[in-house]
Length: 148
Image (spheres, rainbow, N blue to C red):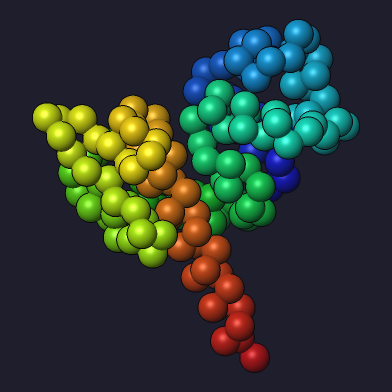
């Protein structure tokens, strides 16, 4: 699945029109989204983050090439699902962040990450999704490395 196909698929999953997505990303016309989805136009790196936020997916999901089966497998493990079991998610994210010397802490029901300060649910979801994507890429690398 290419980048344009991913954007279109996720836009439809969210029930967004091309016009709505264009506004969220910062384009003035739905035709720009149409051209991106058809693979007729690219976009600069600054729009990659805007698409990530508008589609509620990590940047890595947009840029890592997955075939349809891998995409469905990742979703079945909660990759794009709403936050569930937040404290368990935070624990899993902290395991990943420990390698960077960081940790999310909970204070009076709010979550904080070092110099970033308080995190909202979308930022926590982004951290979770990014960690899962990193693990998927590492797993695929090891799997390919061991194939003869």
